[in-house]
Length: 459
Image 1 (spheres, one colour):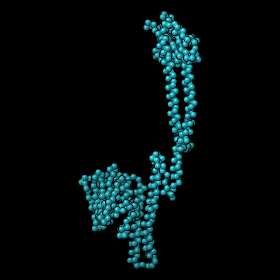
Image 2 (cartoon, one colour):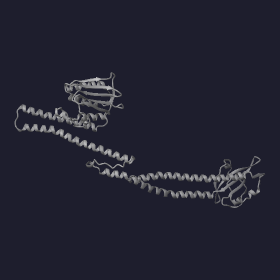
Image 3 (cartoon, rainbow, N blue to C red):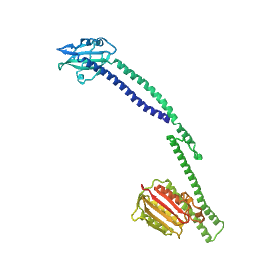
Image 4 (cartoon, rainbow, N blue to C red):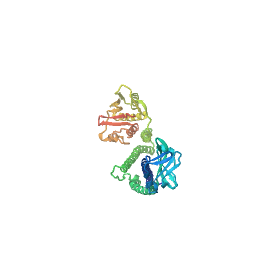
């Protein structure tokens, strides 16, 4: 059966408290029992100290140092807390006993006289605490002195204490459970309010937040964590909407060009040259859409992919080969420079690093032109780093943060007809984050840009 969180808290706290109270009550009873028994044993020891030097056995006969001590009132009649005395020989045969014993006898146990310990036993209907000591005459043992003290009052006290504890124990547990249940309910009221408010937030009102208490306790931390989560969800949803809108817009343009070209072709017969020109225009639109779709798929794979497998890679050789490869593809020389003479080894994903650098180098070539210079540089400070440096048009400072947003392109690139989809740097940023590589950029308008990759020391 599913119980509410309030019920579970109350039950758990009650069980824990029940265990604590049980141990406390048990300790109280044991301490009381020990104190009572210890006091009786101390009184028995006082009686032993009092009588052991006054009673002697001489040739099988009892002798008293002071006869009046034996005839004291405490030994001749039953009192509230009487002392029982009996003298026995070595075989345990009774030689004399106090009149308050009546027809009863104390228990003879020679081994306990050696241990000098007291024990509790029954004498008739009475419960007593008994001690036994040897009687010596001229260093020779002649018999035993048995002393006992009534344990009835102490037993009654202990039984009453036990009964009281057993009676109040369930009352305390019931009271605790009800109190814990009430306090648990009051404690989780803020959580219920948070739950109610969170359930009211949907995709349509994702800008709303859970009211914060202002405190720094667990409830306040939970509220802030939920609000931070809602903020991230809102931003993610906005980015998704913007991404969808931008993708639709970017794909709509080449589709419109392709449709217009085909419509023109079917209106009337054309010459071979006109057909060839229109088909080339259509192919350009198709190539543009294909490139955009490829990059959209690449970006989706990066965002939805699992952690990349990292292997040790020697950077200098890898970058030198990559610079030659991209130079051939772009038809522009890319200069490679190593700031260190020794090999540089880093744990990274080779495919991801290759895609990052290909996008950066292609952008550098595209915005620099054949008259500028593109440099691929590698070095090592505290950690390894890679820089892609160009002498192209540069990026305005106000656009440096936006260039990594999907589909963002500066107006100048659009005006000059520089091809691109605005997805390359977004892919670079995602791959760098996935590879634990720190990406930074510095640029000056009209003088060029520098993209830098710093490897994490722990990678």
